Image 1 (tube, helix red, strand yellow):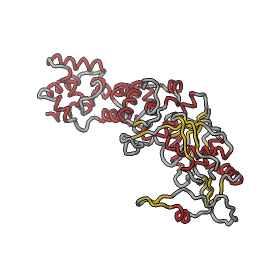
Image 2: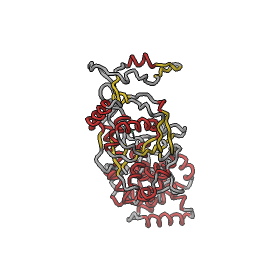
Image 3: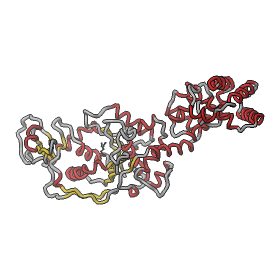
Length: 466
Ligand code: GLU
């Protein structure tokens, strides 16, 4: 079994496209087949090297890599031309000299204010033209003995198209460049693709491609059209709904495995299981389990899956990921040791949904607060707070080893002496250290930021509440 992912480098890799890549990849892995990559760059105006690079980067990030070197479609132009000539020679395609103006004249219909075209009228079909040097497009001659095209879609079941809805469509433009429906067929055959798994937005191309497979003398592959990812409005997911570029999810601090896990569940299920390892996905994946309906992209659900992966990954592995992949420069800006940072990662990761949030919290802890959350101050600071914090500063000044145990004993001793609950002291201390009452263990934080900085932040806060 050989499958392929065939993105067009006309933009950054879309989140929906990476799901198509993932389903192809899982199908190949599950069946011990091959997963291939083809860059469909025949639209020279819109294709950019920058986007090809970005597609490779995105696939690399989610660890979906092709099993053979990627095929660059424009490199195969000689083969495309050869097949065009063969179809012309066999009268399965023909030269069309109609100019855009003539087509407009003959085929235009107006629909309200819209200008539409009817089907091509076959004007140039069956004619022989002197080679006048004039530009021509190449059209596929629809077979006259076919009335409908039927295929068995692995996801959608039997799909039938009436041939009447098609015309002799163009397979090469007048500048000689071949069109999508044609090149995709020639290249899929060359790459010996057994299953074409792609978005259902391509389903209306499939009958045309089947006719081309037959005309070229190729074996027709099997097809599976995947439902699209939808935005909350039920329309195709757009930039207005959520970030659509895969690399934006990397930037925003999602773990690649979490994103993959979230995406696979959009349209595929295995009982009620929500969280899968890659190995489990490979073991369980099948196209038969893919639903027919589009699934709505749910950011809150993605956040929650990412949170699960953050809690699951070891502190050391998360540290490595941030350092090697996410923000290679970030830790250099902190004068903490690797051990301290790893410890902090462990303290913060159950409390955040993304790495962006995690680093935001670390930066806040490192720099100290620039202001204090008003609601938290109102709730946790009262007339006695200044007194307790003043005592705490005095006690901390004589503490030599700023360890979590010693700090926690010191805090408890202060509370016992004043017969107050620990929260009366701990919450104002938190606000003093990070500007808000929500944080991991406050003595853990104080131990990491150290004696001088803790006392300095306490003094600043004290002067503010006084
Ligand atoms: N290049 C097409 C796209 O990006 C894919 C076509 C296909 O998978 O056949 O939508």
